[in-house]
Length: 608
Ligand SMILES: *[C@@H]1O[C@H](CO)[C@@H](O)[C@H](O)[C@H]1NC(C)=O
Ligand SMILES: *[C@@H]1O[C@H](CO)[C@@H](O)[C@H](O)[C@H]1NC(C)=O
Ligand SMILES: *[C@@H]1O[C@H](CO)[C@@H](O)[C@H](O)[C@H]1NC(C)=O
Ligand SMILES: *[C@@H]1O[C@H](CO)[C@@H](O)[C@H](O)[C@H]1NC(C)=O
Ligand SMILES: *[C@@H]1O[C@H](CO)[C@@H](O)[C@H](O)[C@H]1NC(C)=O
Ligand SMILES: *[C@@H]1O[C@H](CO)[C@@H](O)[C@H](O)[C@H]1NC(C)=O
Ligand SMILES: *[C@@H]1O[C@H](CO)[C@@H](O)[C@H](O)[C@H]1NC(C)=O
Ligand SMILES: *[C@@H]1O[C@H](CO)[C@@H](O)[C@H](O)[C@H]1NC(C)=O
Image (cartoon, rainbow, N blue to C red; front, top):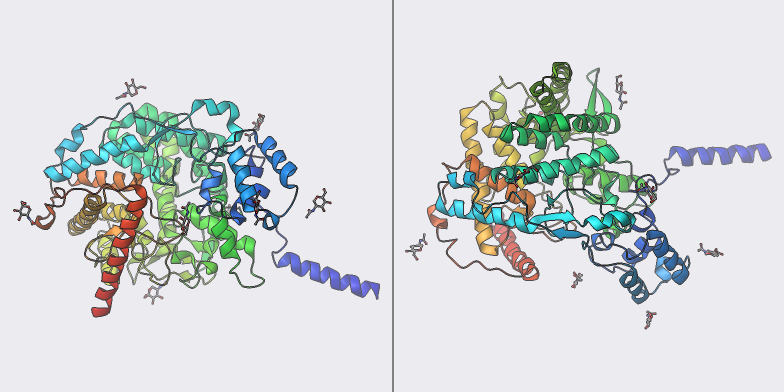
């Protein structure tokens, strides 16, 4: 009898374990990499602040410095509230506690003026159209408002801050993104190079390098709660772009060991083997180990997990959310098994074509940089790796019939046949046989067939309209529009180069018009309607500033300095007085504008 009972219990336990419910929690930061994880990455204070919704944006609280050391704050909490659950606490009391022990978000960052900033960078003077040149100068001026450095006095009390200390000044994206961000920095740097701010570029690269040296990789952004995830790997591309502009070999030599270390991170922590047609390929994935709510999105993550079906694996859900955040595409139908709903997210089942396209570029860049400093051995190693990997990208992600690359799904063992701007990344990174000039034409024809060029404001992230996620229709984003334009421009096919220019004109003039209409550059744009508006959707309000938007535009204005002109119907846009509303009213204005544009867009759709 007892034996039978034991047998049943063991079976139940085994099922429990096999079911995956028996997993350890992996926090986004812990005692191995921070001294304040029990304040900013987990624990009763984080829980209570979010339970009572002290702030609309969960990021607010985790960006607030502490007035005392973390253990003192924690003990004060216990003394006041004991171990009561968040739900049994009084919101007013929780707010009073936070007010007493924390100061305002972001106060550890100080504004700065980059020492290499100049009012009229000579390169921008080559922009022929006077209105576009004037605009470029205005964008150049925004660098001064986005420059930050970390108050050096915080070093002595590092544990009182969620901020990751970096020694040099840097450019932030803007809005709620008040610290450094990883992949944003690539487009920011493109813009800084256009403005000849090479010192600031170096500072930003060196900051990211300190992260690799300390943590083995570049975290998503400059906060402890980003210590389990990275972002699209573009550090070597930043070094490459700076080298192309300055020819500074010493700087490459300084950075190469760091770049190698970063590439090891992706090789060791973000690969998976997949067998296709009897052949095994090693490919890369966005896959953070953390499996708890993201502190900066704690409330919305817990609310969403409550919508999961009974018995669903919450830890898996949190891991998939954070892994999508690692991709930079948080969120998009591209990660959802039904292309509709966030609760069906399965990022860790997806082999993302953009990441693999970028890794391929990293190999190419490493080969080149080693060659530039005379290290032929390492250069050869990366040449060989890249030759193999280019075939991998072709075999795993490319569909010959459709003439494009797609994400590959491990669960369905098939491509995701939908259009996302990410599918064109291998074109941008030259991860194909460049003698094959028909390839760029095919990618273009595919996108044309999908209708992605039909919008006046640029290319939308996807054509998926079933979600209101920010990386879907109708939002268009700078990095992706820029990568598609550059992919076509750098292809060896003259016809495609012209197409690249036409897309650039759309993107640039859309941004131009919205700038003079709203007084701001935005994080993303709604590309449909009679002309674009700031984007919307997703988890937070659209942000202004905006680092990568400005960078992509400055780069394009310079690339096409003798070809881009303000069209006749827009010449008066800059002379009508710019509204310079406060941030709040801007959001309202953009919201109204946006609803109107969406309405127009929908009408357009219904009619045609
Ligand atoms: C935590 O603080 C101790 C003592 O100040 C320090 O030695 C240690 O390096 C810190 N750990 C981390 C991960 O910052
Ligand atoms: C928080 O959001 C609510 C509802 O959207 C809004 O009414 C309120 O003003 C917001 N509060 C803050 C501090 O932004
Ligand atoms: C709270 O702490 C007390 C004393 O340490 C303990 O008896 C009690 O079980 C705890 N309650 C909870 C909900 O953990
Ligand atoms: C919360 O506490 C404050 C004082 O600390 C009190 O005035 C208020 O009535 C309490 N609210 C609730 C809902 O208990
Ligand atoms: C750039 O940095 C170098 C070395 O730190 C310095 O000598 C130079 O003055 C800086 N240039 C500008 C324009 O600030
Ligand atoms: C993939 O396969 C290679 C060669 O068999 C092996 O060295 C590597 O460790 C495997 N990678 C993973 C993530 O399993
Ligand atoms: C490629 O796309 C075509 C048409 O969409 C489809 O029929 C075919 O099965 C795809 N091939 C692969 C290998 O996925
Ligand atoms: C632009 O403004 C000028 C002067 O006000 C006017 O003559 C011209 O017709 C306007 N052009 C357009 C396209 O609106």
